[in-house]
Length: 200
Image (cartoon, rainbow, N blue to C red; front, side):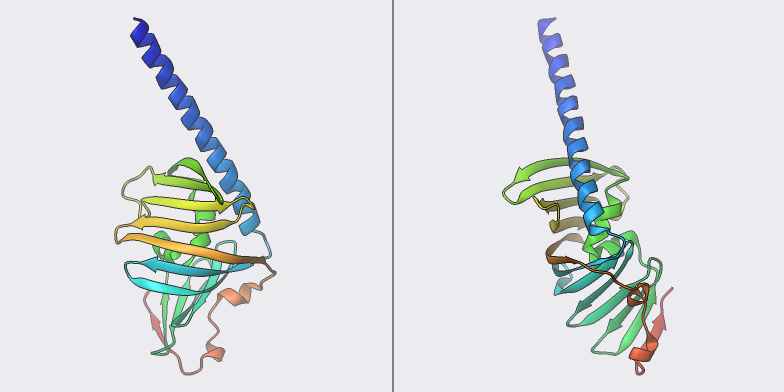
């Protein structure tokens, strides 16, 4: 009987600790989301490493909108439609991207993703915290994420697991700025020779 009481106490304690960790992890991400998701917008430098290659560049975000520029491509997303301009071919692919596709190009997509459908845990690291997210629905396109957040509550790294494997995005040089909504839409006048391919 004593052994049973001990195991029961240990289980309850573990569940309480897990719940407290989850609450603390969510508070950290809430604060990060409030900084990153400011109404006016923000920008940062990024480096992506994954199965499909590496890329680096600059990203601007405003709510669910983003634009990313690399040496090979420019991507605009206005919250629904995405335009991807390939510099080598001068082609613009127009699409309505999935959650996973958005996350692959926009490392700040986590600021809305973590709120639903993930179990959270965390650990302290030298630079701040590493928060581990595991999808509650195994069929979800993003199955797992590690988000490293600095003590300034800015994200330093986002590592995500999709069906194609792990992708790691390092983030630096975060800067708050006021960005016009038009910056997140493709402007055909600026690319008069581009061939537009509608994939929707």
